[in-house]
Image (cartoon, rainbow, N blue to C red; front, side):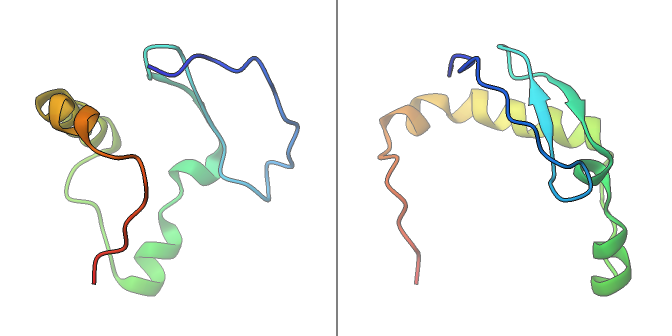
Length: 81
């Protein structure tokens, strides 16, 4: 797991999506824009199938189940055609 860099950056909350996690990867802070899905609802007529907490749990479970494959993969970005 990546270590905390110890570097904090001051940003304007109304300009950036901001979240903070602890060393276990648990989100400990998220500004209002991190959780705001109104633009997706309004412009794309989209709505989530699961709530935020359930979705994070599913992502965490998937990563745990696929960690060995992910660890063996290159971190280089490859665009699929």
